[in-house]
Image (tube, rainbow, N blue to C red; front, side, top):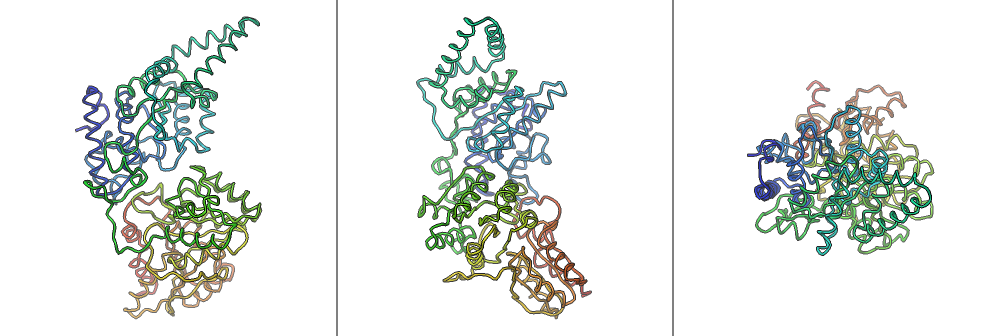
Length: 618
């Protein structure tokens, strides 16, 4: 059994190939039960095995971008015995996490940040005078992110010895030129080549007009050759980063050779590795999109286990509602940042291809572009997961809210997301959106309310957001025609006189369940579906205060969230009724089933009921 990466240094390359096969079998076995990021992790197995066979981790550092390809890394770094707990409550996380293992350099989860972290580690090594190796593993999609480009520019400027492994699963290798190009790559990535090149270039620059002319000719010829055999390399070369030709990402010998040369370089080297998502498991290879983030499935057939009686998901309800709205309003434009399927926009993109924009992993750009569309009279709907929208706070504030642009922010995966854990939990959006002038924020309590909230948002002016959770909706009937909500007004869903629960979003169902439990004990509780986080319903707050005790409940951080809005309302109105704010605590919540997490955190129906009993002395 591999207990740490040093164990694999004793294996021959044929034995390492066998290890890769065993790793894939373990990944398929565990994800078939637990779900997870299968296709990407299968595609990166040889990269990870090759790196660990050459590096001395954890002194040397591997920084994973996003981290959904890092399952092999977890298996090689002492977590094999616990790998069956992957993504489960109290188990190991689905992403690298420094609090889980000293081998994890960075809490990966969001794209395009690994190069910046790697740059920080490399700079610290320079200051400390040590020789540790720093490697970033980044995918071709993540490399398109703005943060990655900022880091590339700095890396090229500083010329620190960072190895960037570009995991490219969007192209194939041309075999006829493979050997020749690899040879040039080995040569150009070597430290000796760089030293000789710099020395010769310096001498020629000091040698007068003739040698300067020869130098310019040589540069032009070199660039022409690189354009011919390594056309994608020119961007990196111009930034000062040596780029190797494509390497077969499933050939351990080639990978180890190229990595070994790159790791000896005294400057930044980008190793271009071509991989195939899902390799080693036929269903994932055939349908890598489905198996990117997959639920439990049958190994033999690849069929995902689904409940045929399940309610539609909030995401699909939103997607259908937006299509219906777009049929009536030709100015609606849908925008997402590499999450077309995840945000339910696939039907929209099919019916309105000219009005659908996928910007790639560029949340800041997507939100900034929405401002321009709105300025030109369009009605942009930006559909992004809550955890990713937080990357564009500045663009929401300056590009949209300041100018009162009518942009609708559809915030998917708001609240806890279950097995993806703390990097993907959408717990901060109510707090950071509430602080922005001109912003209005809705939290529909079920799928029918989601349809109405979207309709309302499209009818308003200025920036407006609506948040809704991941997963299955409540099973209520959808309205035949969507209804508009009065701005800043909630609705009473249960009358009561002993206490009042002001509930936001899908926490309304837990509030109602708690009120029903308490009713059997003779406690009468008023329940209000607040609908609006901003502006909050002052009248509903005042009426709730009249019962003698107010409890707020939200699926978001209690620091500055919806409960804080209620407290501010009470202060404005001079109300002194006792208040209990319930929500997600000021900590990062781990992965696990949402209902179990709610019970553990005390915000499920039992926790709500217990808080009211305690306040009332029952």
